[in-house]
Image (cartoon, rainbow, N blue to C red; front, side, top):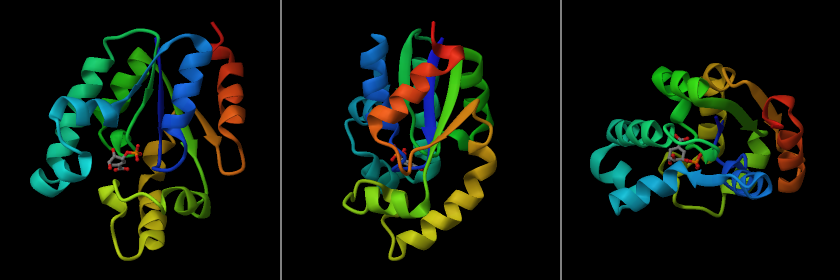
Length: 168
Ligand code: S3P
């Protein structure tokens, strides 16, 4: 089985995933990094050149590949849950943990980055608020949810490691 970390941008999936994998001595993969490596293009360029629907297709393809592995901690892109097939696949091949955070915390964490095409807009706060609302029903389908707003990476990792379903 694998551990899939889902949740909005800036909730800590990559940092938490890396540390969690190291602690459990599992492999770690960041789906966005894998896509950029295999496509030899930055995600922001995939969005700009081919559009979001094309990116979602690629994302789905690589998730499928990764899901054939075992004992992987997978940090997924924030929009991976929008495709019901992806949720089904992740649940079938692992456990789905959603990291969430307040709009303020997200804004603080992503404000320095320009590599997130979804947030490269004039009013990022409004965009985050809208997307959080729109995506809530998707994120809610995770097996567990952890609010990372006030927690350190270490604290989030400890919480996940303590969960009975993944202690083995
Ligand atoms: C996206 C989140 C990004 C990346 C892409 C789209 C989204 O990943 O997959 O820019 O739709 O929320 P992170 O959540 O790792 O930033």
